[in-house]
Length: 492
Image (cartoon, rainbow, N blue to C red; front, side):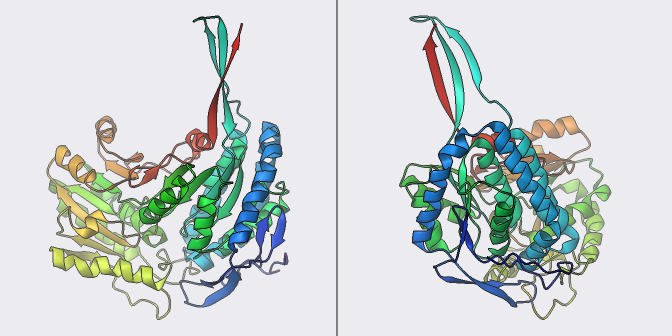
């Protein structure tokens, strides 16, 4: 393992030096296929890393199994201390984590420090404190047929396979491993093969933080590595964040061993603007929100629904946002729209724009400045005149493309909002908060923000209905995904 970091401030040239897997507390060179890591904003190859072999996946699971008994029996205070130390080390390396993510994901540096790094650390701190909680429930006495007393204990499920998407490599990992470790589980972390460097670095930092050997393991690789991990008999739980299509396959693989899954999948999240709203106060913010991280966010509110009486005002007010969108070099502080992760994904995003006229749609607004010669960039656009059943209104685009749809009344708004196969998030703008809160109960989404809501708080659940996933991450709900209830009853 090479632990030497650049003496200068990490920036556009910096990538982590960590290249080895972390298995049972030891750094091990990968024996699997070579993975080419590309900077999506320059198309330059950052490095090549070796993925895990299937045997090394088995070794990582075995290491997690060996570590499970001592870790699960350790005190809540000890688990909390370990997670706090891990967070301390991550905080000390914020500049390197930031540089790694900007260079391998392409998130603009102006947004990445909070969105990609500090937000996750807030959650890890919360999880470290949550590890202290005694979750035992006293059910009290029961006298039929004889006097007894009952407790419900909550025991860690075991070894957890944590599989993350490419768009938020640190945050998505923390949501999973922080909750699992707080619950007393051990983990094997597998990142997207598109963005492995930040996660390999995370393994190095876990070792620096003194996380006990085998509690936290890191492997990298493609679909075969993922399949081996999700079907390994030593894995007790699979937690995955990514597309619904891949989530479907992971669920099938996990079913072979009758193991539980938590799936945080895609979204087609609506943002509903009700009659009477002051659109001039938030239209620009709405557009800047769905386009951040290049629109590569599962909860991107890119299906904009506006009451027909407000449509002209909303379009006029929101047009200013496209003048504020700068696409390009993520290290330029003025940039707020980065690249797509790979050329195939860029082509898929563009296909929604190119296909809109065939369904009656057109581009209402867009950024028309020339794109950089290098990099997988797409200029943001707002599509209009499409029926709510159109492809761009039903499928997750995962890029800087939004659609706008008018509605006549609340009933039509609710119908359109619920018309997709997804149900991850939604937003309602209304001058009447109580009315919006009541309306929210009729929208099949795991999260509903009202009048813009706020940040993703560490004590609130996150997950979705329908093809947006199974189970919840974050908060007590996230920790409970890694706990099994045990009824304990004794005669009195």
